[in-house]
Length: 637
Image (cartoon, rainbow, N blue to C red; front, side, top):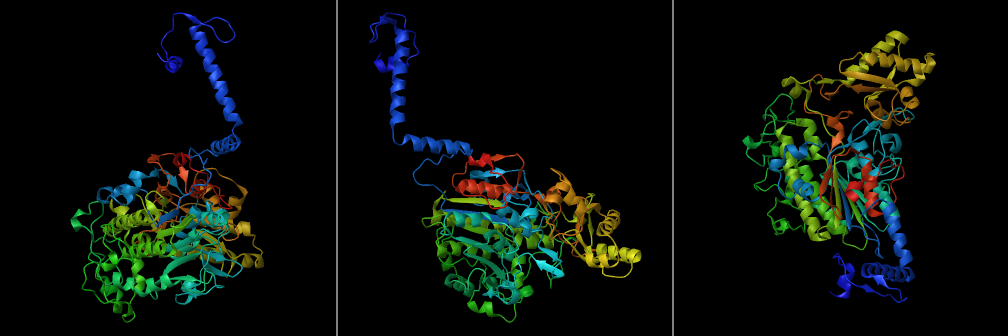
């Protein structure tokens, strides 16, 4: 046996003894221990004397303290080339698995098969709407902190309602009228995209892309290089002077291709034979809303006829972005396309596009063009693409979660995701982009659908509730406009009128509570004073507290029963909506994929506000200024 082998051998040494340097005779096993100790001491001394020891030790200690198994001991800070945040508007968590058998390999299945899924991700506030959802994902804060309390709210100083991204101090760039007078100025905190810009001395590029203005503007943050959204008036993607004075050349050229008209020049047929849509209700049901100009909400939907865009002879209804290499390796721009003259048809309704799955297609088109033209993820700095898909929400509102239209929209979205991921592989590099996917809220089942299956549900009309309150208060306190607004399931009382009539606001609010709790579909109601004086760690009241921002919220907050919602078409209840604190509205998917993301899943409860904190930890940057979320350690290990 060699000396080295003998030192590490576990075989018993029973014969002989040896004499170490001191001249003392020891048994062989004692000598072995002696030599091991001497060797360890020499190695330790050499390590401690190394100039690199102090820095390495400090780096390791900091990494352990931060709770991440991805040690950053390299001399150069390692970050992903590109972060892509994907928000799917109105995506219920269960859609991931409801349509699983029909998804392809490159979209949702790739995310789940290669990435990490948090199966119990919820919103922790109400109302669950698009504006608050996007703001909370990117700020890591609830509306009580970031100030985005709804898509609209009543401004007492102005005496009128305002829109979440409305900003009359800026002008439209490339758009028509008020469509471009938008900015993130209503958002009271920074976003994770802002923090990336700050961390890199504004060298990182941040671009927002979405059909909806709020779905692009809020995620992109206050310091974005640009945010682009769709203007149905001209079929173009536009911006505002908050970001730039003119559209960049690549966006101008993108708009000149007239893709909106081209997508609307073909009927919307199902991807698969209609009989295969077994996850959905029959095609023609009473709780779905038809397009204007259609007799019934059934396939095929004649988009050329509905929109006024001339029908095209071409059967392929994906025009494909310029310079894009398709998944099969062929250049998509070589595909025959409809003539540009279709974009100039007489007064076409290009605003129809978002309400079709092809709104998602044109969103992907612009996103890929942004990656190419802005060289996102292909520079020496981390960039961020904030990408939101909105057509899922438009289609969901109109047809409801159990419709074939929604199923077909998600099957097509799955293809769009595959197209995006393939392009990231080709341009940024496989595994070099950090991607997360979630939703801004879920959706309720259509009440008529539930009642048809003997399940509890219902709808209320906001105008009916408002009129009921107004009439009751007039009878009690005399004439006057007592109710200024009913928005986000909140009642805005006329405080000035109450003061003129010597009615205490607290007493007036309590009267409203007593009226509201007796209305059909209402679970409970609370005064704003009750919300501000109390604190709840869980349950329905916690959701109300987390969604309450005093300067923008109402005087009374209303909670509807599970399965009930405010119907836009009351007394009918077509399609669906959202906004509640119940699981169907708060439970959303949360998937991480790509750069340094291991494969796995967790059923531990997490909140949407944890996303920004987790991305900050991946990037080793500061969390947004109002962030209350925590890094999700399971995906960071």
